[in-house]
Image 1 (cartoon, one colour):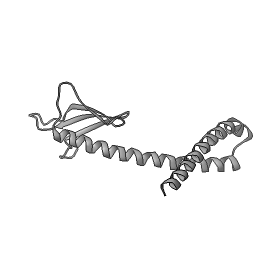
Image 2 (tube, rainbow, N blue to C red):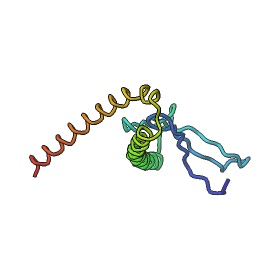
Image 3 (cartoon, one colour):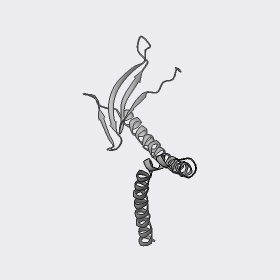
Image 4 (tube, rainbow, N blue to C red):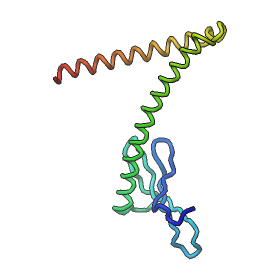
Length: 137
């Protein structure tokens, strides 16, 4: 490990993280991590751990991390969707060139229903955006 450790460590969990203060300034020069808070990104909550009160620096660092984490998750979400488009393209190629009749029989109804559902939602959302654009414009 390098000599410069961050002051805080965020252990990722569903919808947030557990926040630890990192301490190397102890007499044994060991890395100690003291849990100071639990964060829920979806709700925007920062809950101090136990009887602890958080300093302004603690809160500022946690809020900075929350904003960066939300941004990262949003970018990942879009990337996942674009990968799904790639998967649809490779699925189309597979269905056209490689799939056996048995394989197609096992996936066709599932794919058709999922694609119909997706198309319905996308068309409705696009129509809503177009109508909203006309009203706002």
